[in-house]
Image (cartoon, rainbow, N blue to C red; front, side, top):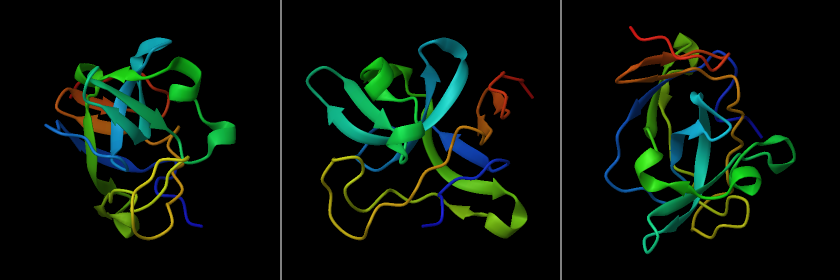
Length: 135
C-alpha cells in the first residue's frame, strides 16, 4: 500500500471547525510542544472535546496510544493539500474506512507515513526536524 505522506512532503494545514474520523490533522507533540505531529483522527469525543489520533502504522507511531487523547482546541488544523513535491501534489483525503480499529465506511485505509513530513500552517512551516520556523 502506498503511504499517504512521505518524507519531504509539504502540506497545507487549515483550521477546522469540525473533525471527523479519518481526517489527517496536525497536533502538538505533548512531549515537545514546539514540534507538530501529523496523525489521523480515529476518535472524536464531543462530550469531553477530545480527539484520539493515530498513525496508520501502529507499530512505529507515537500517537494517542502513547500520550492519550488530545484536547480539541490544541489541534492546529486539518491537512487538506500536499503542495510539494510537484509530482505528488493533490488533496489529502479522509481515510474512508477503519483506521486502527475506528469504524467508518468505504475503501481500505491508506497508510500514513508522517513523522518526517513538514507542515505549513498560518504560523509558518514545521520542517522534518520538528522545529518551527515562521515565514
